[in-house]
Image (tube, rainbow, N blue to C red; front, side, top):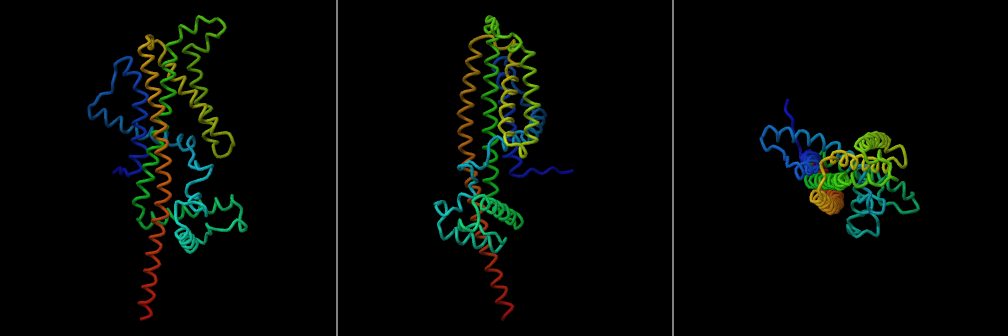
Length: 305
């Protein structure tokens, strides 16, 4: 059996999954001095684990980081607005004509013909149909690259975001003895057993919310905060008995700060590549449709002659 990896497998799953593994391992390297083995056999196992972990990470990222980041709307829809300056008016009108001719969908309809909500759905359908047409004709080269890059940035942003909470959990575990001195704080809340219970509850609630993400209104926020709780508790659980000196705590806080800024930069990159992806699909489709119409016209002329 031959396993083939495409551009999206590497950028969308393997690399983000590998980063998440690295993020989760950093505290063990800083505190225990244990770093992964660089042997080929170990690297191959890590690559396989990272690939499957990347699938889980992208599932969470897709629900935690929405694609409709332009005022609650998708770039593919906003770019077709009359007031948008991303494309020229002539190009938008030509593209609307091409989409209507190819799929029978009017993406440039006046406000009195359909509601904004209906127009959003029509534009979404037209965009995915245009993308499918490019895939079918094997002419989606640049759009596919942008899709892989925005998936990469979204995955990296999520992995670094997990790192922020995870490192803070580790750093907080070093304060266990200090917190125990306050009698008004229930000791069970700060014990290793208490953090283990928080991990279990966070995962159960998070998975349940993820399964119902498209059916319940507040499922996605619940999923995010439940997994944040589980991640923080996991860092705390692993750090109990390990983080005992201020140097380690400072290193972990520094790692959290670095991860925060890295996550923010990757998120900015995600938004940029997501917009370039939408632009590339429309431009490639318009150019491909123009070529197809020209070929049909030439074929008709040849038949007439």
